Image 1 (tube, helix red, strand yellow):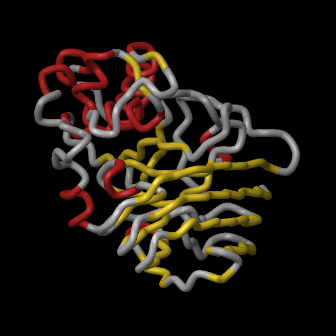
Image 2 (cartoon, rainbow, N blue to C red; image 1 turned 135 degrees about the vertical axis):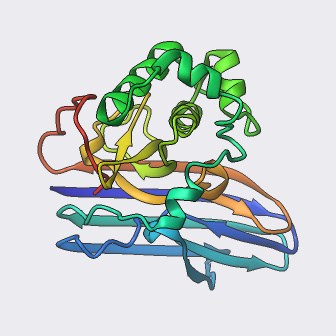
Length: 268
């Protein structure tokens, strides 16, 4: 499989702002080839940055701006082949079964057991995916950045991160390690960065997309973590910024894979 992805961002910072950006395809030694370009400019001048390694191959570009700045970012990548499936160490299997900021699994434990009883394994993953897909409506701009899984369930609507957070919380309530992955998603409409859930069963991390908006087999990982607090594509570490432009593209050569929600698929 050959995939092509790109992102263009324009943002304006206040003085003394530190920025962490995650838009690059995650490092994975399994790809046949990965060619990419990244240009970060301010006023026609190249912006210096440090690339920081995160969990699961994620790469953050870290920048500091002492003066108010308008920054333009252009990223593109061509990826041939599929990556090696991510493994898990014992600490990760503990971390990803705990409640977190946006996936309050402790508060949803009664709901999870009432809806899914003694289900486990692949059957549980498919049931959670289908239940979240059926209970929520996808409505652009319908959720706040502070909403977690509980708020999402109460409002019965959200965007991709909200669908993923609810699925993650329900799975963790059943003692299944689950995490959020930010991805490029060929076939997504409207095109944007996308958020999905990953659950660890049968010795591997399997991707779940409760929105059903794009085929999982074509997705490319950017970052992964406990929830969206770990995977934001743009965040500040002191200071502030305003996002002015965001354009994302993701395509595959040839036909998109056919999505089967019941199939176990790893991100690659």
